[in-house]
Amino acid sequence: MPTISVFYGIVITMFWEDHNVPHIHAFYGEYSASITIESAEIYAGALPPRVTNLVKEWIELHREELRENWDLLRKVIQCIS
Image (cartoon, rainbow, N blue to C red; front, side, top):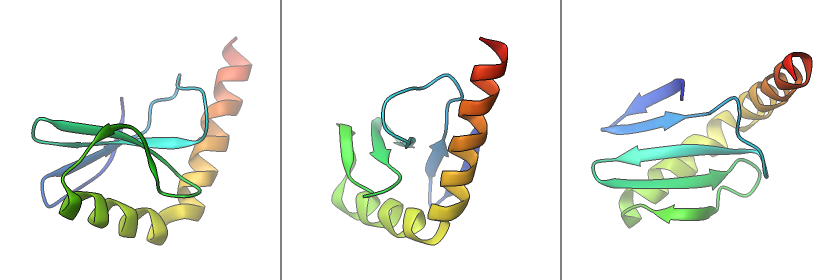
C-alpha cells in the first residue's frame, strides 16, 4: 500500500486495488483501521481514541485531495482491468 502521510507515528495509506467505499488505512503500532473518506468513520479495525481523533482531523483537512486520489486510482484500475 502506498504511504500518503506519516505524522505522530501514524501511517496513512491508500491501496489502489481496494474497493468498497472510498477509504484510507491508518496504522499506529499494533493498531490498524479502515476509515471512510466522506464521514471519517472507522468501518474496520480499531485505533486508540487519541489517534482516531488525529486521523479524523487529518481527513477533514485533506478530504478533497483524498477524493481526487481515490477517483484517480479507480480510473487506473479500470484502464488496466
